[in-house]
Image 1 (spheres, rainbow, N blue to C red):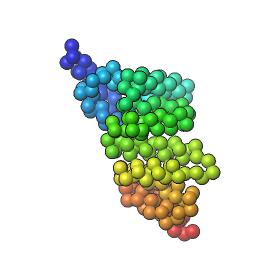
Image 2: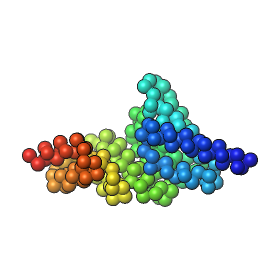
Image 3: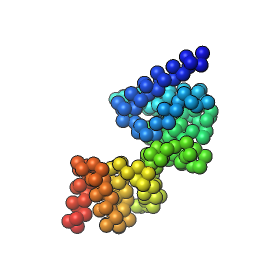
Image 4: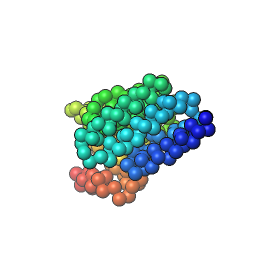
Length: 213
């Protein structure tokens, strides 16, 4: 019976990675699924997998009402997984992504705060933590007022230290530096974005603007 359960788990795992690849859900957040068959709490993982599938469907749906409904279901599955295994950061991150899709950005930040807390963060690899920090920074930036971006900068500096190949993180860091009036730091961050992705037009335009100002 246990071998049958593991076989089902592996099949579900392959399906999830296909969904994540096709719909561009941050895959580094879910690399821990490779350890799926080694985890004791199989039921929590099933809720997590179900939630990841629902989130993928929500993101790909062109109908806003259906997308919102699927995201809500994904949130519910994430909460079930969290109830069973509260120290698993991936479930908190899944909940945050589902909340973001529903437009609840502040609540999504709260979920990421838990994922990145000492309680759960140790379940993440450095790359996964880098992705989670970038997502929290992105959300914090979207709700920041009056150019208050210090906490955003703090997350992004750590994010690009842990994961050096995310051009979006470097670009957002540069934008934050601009808001703080740190022109040279902004230039360097845009250059780092272009180093990672040479055809990153947004960063190149911003760098040209800074160079001519």
